[in-house]
Amino acid sequence: MIIEKIVPVGSQNHMRWKDFFSNIGKKADSQGWIQLFSIWTLTVAGIVLSMDIQDRYVYWDWDGWIVGLVKLMIVSIVFISILNPKKIWTVGKKRLNIKEIFIHGVVGVILLLLGWIDIGMIEAISKGKLESMVMVTYLIYSALSIVPYVLSFLSCLLVFQFILELEEDKGTWNNLNWENKLGYLSMSVVFMVLAMLLGISLEDPVASTAAAVALPFSAIALIWPDHVRHLQRARFYPLFIFAMFLCVRAPWFLVPLAVLFFLLRTVNYFRYGIVHPSFGVDFLEED
Image (tube, rainbow, N blue to C red; front, side):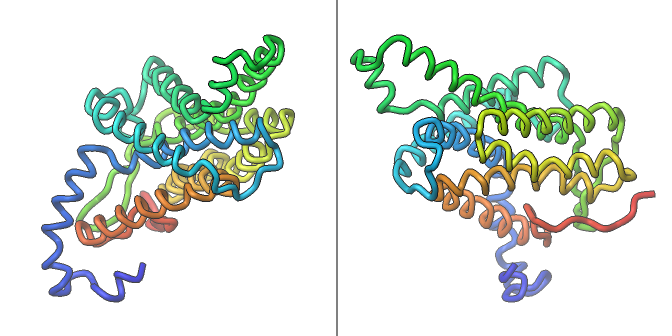
């Protein structure tokens, strides 16, 4: 990160801004800003799915960016004011039980549907411009098309059952509980494989290709010894991969992603002296 070169850790400028960014960081932690990556990705997945259903060859389309950003603003407000404070969305903070996994799955589907809702289609339906059979066919196909994204989300959700905790004095991340590793990561791999196969069957290039590229990360974490670096990759990269594939069709999504990404990196750099979120991993071997 460039700011590491301009403002080294421990320098006068770094210490001067530390308190300021620490206050922002505390607010970001309390409001769960880092969780917005998954909230936004689910919403935009619904938007891209709607685009795909209407025109499967759509590519790098900036149309609809205003509606898209409004939807992201709405889900952000709902998350910060309701989902996070009421502890409805707690993925990554603790291990979830079956009920909590189900609740997260329902919220994920709602976010996908919010993104999928198309104003033009609603107007056509409300004005009776579509024949009943056409409308039913459209809704059934849309429901099936959502399934690969739900499976991919559940796959990623299971990886987040392993909680990473920051060791502030060393600036490294640790996972202290590998219990049920075989079960969680095996199901994660199965869900991602199903998402890939269903995406291929439905001829959805985003769902199928993103799932295929994301699949190895949970598989590697499952097969190799319990090293935190495999878990770091399995948590971050699949989400990043899906977000980037969505940007191929909705490039405007790159803007809010970049703003949030670099904002959090800057805040955490001044706060802890580390770059997080990051594409890098910790290479310390666990005992």
